[in-house]
Amino acid sequence: LSSCGSRKTVQKGKLMDFTSTVIVPLLFGSLGIFALFRLLQWMRMRAYLQEAVVVITGATSGLGKELAHPALNCILLTLVYSQTHEPHPVVFDLSDTKSVVNAAEEILKALGHVDILINNAGISFRGTIVDTGLDVDKKVMETNYFGPIALTKALLPSMIKRRQGHIVAISSVQGKISIPFRSAYAASKHATQAFFDCLRAEVEQYDIEVTVVSPGYIQTNLSLNAVTADGSRYGVMDKSTAEGQTAAEVAQVVLNAVGQKKKEVLVAGLTPCLAVYLRNLCPRLFFTLMASRAKKERKVKGS
Ligand SMILES: NC(=O)C1=CN([C@@H]2O[C@H](COP(=O)(O)OP(=O)(O)OC[C@H]3O[C@@H](n4cnc5c(N)ncnc54)[C@H](OP(=O)(O)O)[C@@H]3O)[C@@H](O)[C@H]2O)C=CC1
Ligand SMILES: CCCCCCCCCCCCCCCC(=O)OCC(=O)COP(=O)(O)O
Image (cartoon, rainbow, N blue to C red; front, side, top):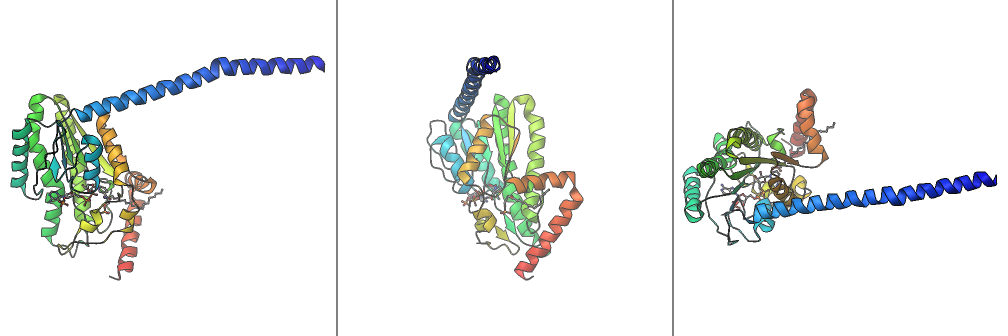
């Protein structure tokens, strides 16, 4: 009995020795390496963003305003670029191609080049397809698609010439799935996803990066500013928007993605992420769910 007891004590001692000489140093070593890796990653990201001339569209509000804060430590208006950390607001209307081209010329004249272009500005839409005038579809498409691509095309040649640049498109989960009563918005975001996927492939040879960001709901003025079927402002803070992620959280994810030169990133809760997978893996079920969602929403609105 006593020899069995002493064997157990020896085994326990060996286990403790193993823990203190192997497991604990291994654990702390791994944690240290991980922390160092994250620190280096963070420093590289900060350097990448801080030394860059950055253009952010839609920096007056919501996500754009938050993106401007940590990236540049400055306050912005509609669009800004900075190298000296001096904000330089440029006011223009994305739905007016001429004013977009003029803005791009103004930026290049003032600073010579752009390192990072963040196509963030956009509007949403609420309405049935049958009631929506084509002028409204065009307005959403011009603001969310033609405006950003015009700006991108205007700045691209100088990026290609320098063989350097990073273009970011703030799309949406609705660039990957379409939900009822968002036709113009979802269409504009699907077009955005497609265009910037093509661009990524075409400009890789010039060392230009393209990042497409697809957020879920964010607490911003997007639903308030959404345009309706007759072109008027929706003016309602939707529950889904109010309960979304904060703009600061999403901005941090976007800046990390840019710093890490990610090709694309989905920043959304579990349900929107599952919806994206369902759309691709089991489209019939997804379409059925969307049809019942449309019926339910119509009932709530009494239409
Ligand atoms: N909030 C959300 O739930 C989600 C948002 N997104 C996307 O995030 C991006 C930013 O939107 P968010 O911050 O939420 O919304 P906000 O309404 O808060 O901000 C939109 C910004 O876009 C600018 N903008 C709108 N129309 C034009 C135009 N014609 N010309 C120039 N600028 C314009 C606005 O400027 P001004 O006020 O001066 O018009 C404003 O600065 C959008 O692309 C949106 O689709 C994606 C997924 C979810
Ligand atoms: C196996 C389980 C599958 C569960 C999935 C069921 C499908 C449920 C539908 C969920 C729809 C999610 C929609 C998300 C939309 C979204 O996040 O959009 C972001 C925006 O751009 C918001 O703009 P809006 O103007 O619509 O507020």
